[in-house]
Amino acid sequence: MQPEFHISRREEDDWTVVEIHGELDVPTVPRIGDYGVHRLEAGRRRLIVDLAGVTFMDSADLGPLVGIRERIRGSAESVMTERHER
Image (cartoon, rainbow, N blue to C red; front, side):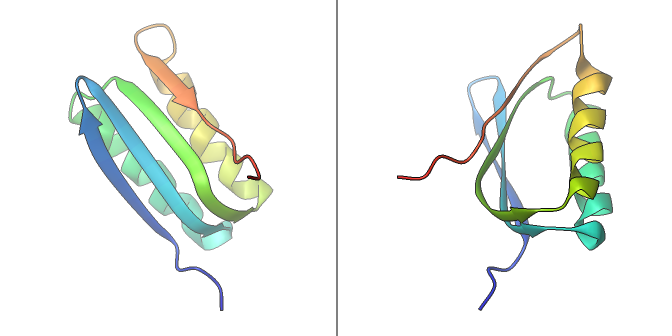
């Protein structure tokens, strides 16, 4: 059974940690982009995108992640993590 796709967030000091879980593919592209834009519009400029819960990523999902990064480049801090096997 495939893990269900979902996005969650938590606030840590002035950082927003965006956690993405499940498989990322073409249908998830708008959800990722919209979520990132909403966080930025809410004034959250320090983002960590945690991909540790991602089990598969289609190349289409790189676009929204890069778009979020480009939108805040120069005026904010961001961190993207990658999954490490344990």
